[in-house]
Image (cartoon, rainbow, N blue to C red):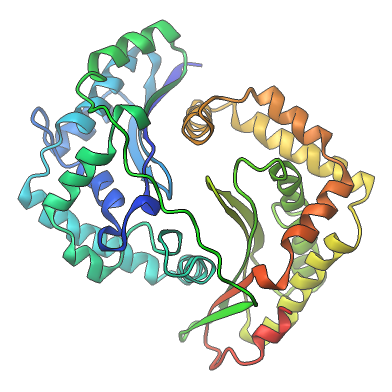
Length: 399
């Protein structure tokens, strides 16, 4: 590789936040780009982009990552810029006030996108009244309540040496990474950061949540609670997702789009966290086809519980999942993400060969078993952004 990707990973995210501080982690992510004792906001971006590289960050439910990529000759500069952002950001009051408005525009942008907003609505339905059900960005009212001192306290209490990882992937030697880390790691405070609140499950029947809007297309998101990233069933679930809706040869794509022409976009996706997970099916469709498409989705879910996939289907799903892993690891960015997520999520890095071995070992009966474990009415949740006037009758479809 000519390039190197560098990431500073911190094991904190939106699900660690109490309700009064919802949005704090994402706000901090923004503020670390707004100037340090050594650099203005413009100089931060120029320090990396001037090398022909790029700089970015993301906040998730359990992790925050600040990352950069450039030619491997500039590895030391990338680490210096990222560590300067982490250790020396000033959180200037004027920049804090401006960035609050920027984030409010980001929140408004997502709210104006039905394909995005339906997932926030689903999260609030699957994980009600708890951090996983709240938006990572926070909401407009909560953002107005957050004070600069709240962010500084959160940064001080939760960005600790014990939950911070420096990851580098590409044309760089481990010894050089260790030397670079030694120069910036000492100022990080010791001690344990805040723990997240475990999920609470109270659901006993299917739930439906409708947001009525004058839109041309109904956005549907159907979510099922599954298992955590530590559960051995995740490998069978990974293959089930490939069969269900992850690609164009999947059952949902073929049945809903190719055979009946009822949707342009339909797909399924998995999320795994430390103590829970979910599988989400999303589609955009005409409001008049809502009941039909919902029945077709549920029919495909029940097919998995009734019979295991054929040997040919299983082999295709395994080849797809293994191939996607192999293709992804050709990118230094993806390798950096893989290593960071593994270290913070599991405490070690699983060799890709071991993951491929586990996927190849899954049998069809295991896929049927996980479908029976998770495809139950008391785990089903349906969120809609639609011109439909009422959600009446939809819950009965999920039983």
